[in-house]
Image 1: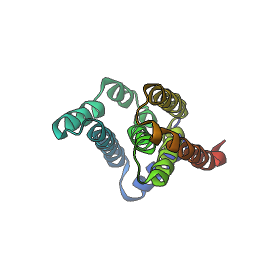
Image 2 (image 1 turned 45 degrees about the vertical axis):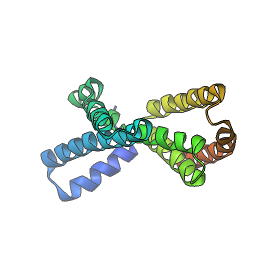
Image 3 (image 1 turned 135 degrees about the horizontal axis):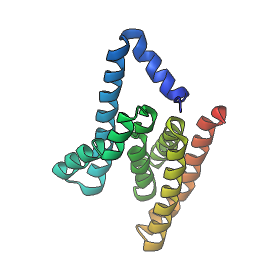
Image 4 (image 1 turned 90 degrees about the vertical axis):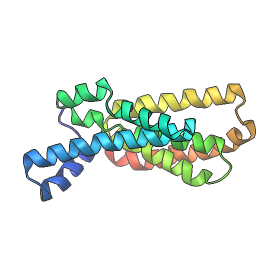
Length: 168
């Protein structure tokens, strides 16, 4: 597995300014920090507790799965930061009154981004979003917002399709 176009573009930008061993280390540290921060944002939205959110972000960034793929040199498989952001904006789309348009577009963008980094993660997140939506629908979680959010989720699918189409 030699990576993908999005990983290549990120590497190329770093290679312009930094020599080989340094750009790889900078990239790896940046990915760990970005993964942890993005999961912190999701945890902050769900738990509304700063300490729990910080610990959650730290544990996500240093999970053995990420460390294993980093050790094996599968750096494209540790680009996980779009996952929690996709879930965050999905939850905001179906549960909040305001900014549904922005949240749905961002949900589609982050779903496309995780798919571009590693296609299997995109498929996994798409199934997870479907399960989360069915769960919210069955539980009656803010029912009036869910039905309004459904139309916006079609917009997320359209944004996802537009971004992914050139790579298919």
